[in-house]
Length: 415
Image (cartoon, rainbow, N blue to C red):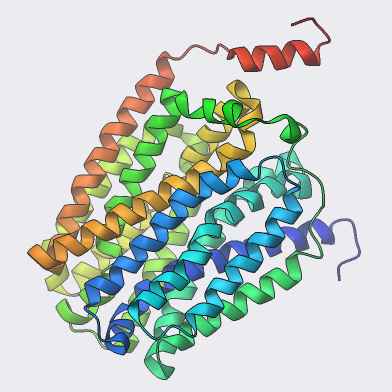
């Protein structure tokens, strides 16, 4: 156990990154093993692919509900209970012997994943201090994304060698290990001083802000744009490109590496350009997705195109998370914790829409149609980003009544 003043924050920050990885691993591992699961359960691959969407949809719906319902509870207790539910769901998957049982077992971790991630983000400033918080928050979000770099290819390799349930044995073991290491080490304090005073109405007021609604819609469309294609990446590699299991694992690894670079790029874009870069990023993303229909049959050119898509997959992350937090901190202080849940909620809603749309596209137009279909979502995200840039530019730096009241109280002035 670390003993020095520096070692403990570094240790705790590292554990939060591991937890984020475990959450992402549990969600994304199915993307790499859909053919094996479909064969094992005797179901069409598109029906198994729909579980990716069900997981994301459950996460998107449950995250704000759980976050709002537990806003006044002790953060550590909420974290502990949700980790128990998360691990119980992963254990239940090991005993799933049919489609319904598998889908039901994935709903338990899905219902907890987004709130666990948002709670992890609220611990960061307390653990490392405000000056280092931004970098560590980026690392935690990257840990979630890195699961597609390491977790999806590992899951695919395990499923190929030992059957698809071997991948979920790994998911379960990692969740247990992360929980056992993290829970004894976390602070027992509340997320913020106003947590006990937060009401449902004061938190939901955040959702009446047009900037927040536009940000949520943009994230949703941006996530859907990639997941129309990404959900069916493994069948594309196997059935369209004719790659063997080893080559598929390698491409999944490279795609995941591109996702990590995308997270790093997102921090640079947020610091250098902010919101004004996103309309151009989404427009480029749309062009790359549209090109997949032509480049995938060309072999190496198609793989290069896929990696370029991966590089833009998470480029919005830092900017949108900063916008949520900045608006909440400035105009809706009592909703600060709730605001942290909006990113995972929105992104998972986008994954659900993209996954379900991908199933429809594959059934009607084939695997090659998923790229152009994703491009339509990316164009919608570009339009929303442009509207959000204009919206924030017009918005004067004027605090909301709630923020003004809080400032007067802090200064000792009468309301």
